[in-house]
Amino acid sequence: MAAQYDPRRRIEPYLSRLFGYALSLAQDREQARDLVQDCALRAFSATRVPEDAAAFRAWLFRILRNAFLDGQKHRAVRAAAADDDGGGPNDEIWRGDDRLISVLTVRLGMAKLSPAHREVIALVDIGGFSYEEAGDFLGVPLGTVMSRLSRARCALLAIISESRVQSLPIAAKRAVK
Image (cartoon, rainbow, N blue to C red; front, side):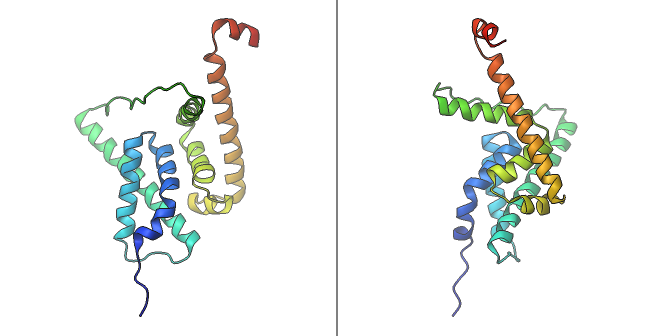
């Protein structure tokens, strides 16, 4: 008798990376959680599931991306119909420790990137996809992924560097020049 397929066990190893990718797309923790949940539900209800681990991972990330794009379309339609701005920002608790500052700095920097740059960083650096897998996922050649990722990382570094200089006290800013 064949072993019974347990979709939860197969998806569990990917949940943290799916959440990181969802967070980079949505820029909101609650929406990211909803996206991961929607992704899992869609995966659980699928009739055809890739057997290969790499194909399965890419399939999950594609489900999540499509769920995000579907949500964007629905929000745009609702916003146009209701003439609503969509609500306020999601505030986080400020603790002042270095790790939190670093995480917030990168998150704010990611939010300032173009969607294409944000997505390629999310796939390769957060999702753990190889350049080839990211190229297949995005439908672009390997060289495009490499150059887009390089430009995205440089842009993120520039944004982070700029934000650090702007957040220095006035006396320290003068010393930096």
